Length: 193
Image: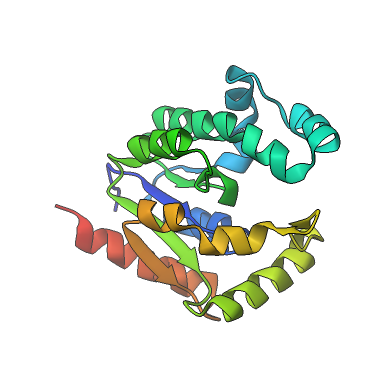
């Protein structure tokens, strides 16, 4: 089975978007793209690099630097979608969470033609989701996502803009990624015209 329309996976860090995206892409016979792996050239088009983000974090603090970097993240989302029109795409948590309304609207417009923007969460219960994602983040990336007293993981879980971008929500609980992928493939099959 091959779909002519992309799927975009969104959500906080450690929800399994990349793992799920690879499985779904293989299941429907389309390419997979992870924005965290391909975004650097797009950030550069907007005048940013990960090195510049690090330098700005040292100069003004991580929270302020993340806000400055929104322009590059929004640009990267648009460009990744343009360059991968028939792919399953995973967007890192910060790529859908914006404080600046202009950047949020740019991402919303870029996602406008995507038939399925799937918000992936381990639980609808906030405290349980936060606990699960914090444990996964510590295990897989050795970070709790708290910087200078700011909890980015909580910010991403609570972000209303991310929820607004989603056309569907997938609650994975403790199920195996392969089971979640089967559910997503079934969802996409039902959504086909």
